[in-house]
Image (tube, rainbow, N blue to C red):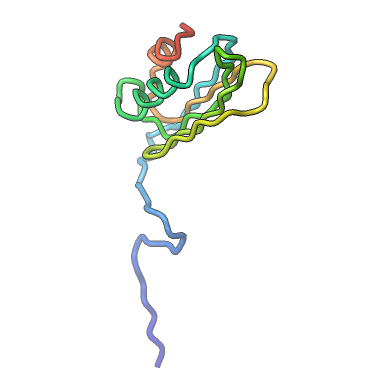
Length: 114
């Protein structure tokens, strides 16, 4: 006879499920900026984002920003992993932070565009 295994609350998609309560609303904060950044400066910003809850609960941050040396910096950050690379020039710098309970004013100050 067949065995049916029922695992309550599990699904087979291979990643951890963090149960978000219904009142946790994810918001995104996005800005365009012509401010120029350095890679080191951006690394410090992203480090602060991922290590502090001062800015909210950050799920992801990404963007493309002009660098002081004329190149463009692309970044993509999720918890535990940050990628920063050089990318194609864009018309204007853009950045986006996704999470919950975001403190928009603190984010503006962190990125220096308040």
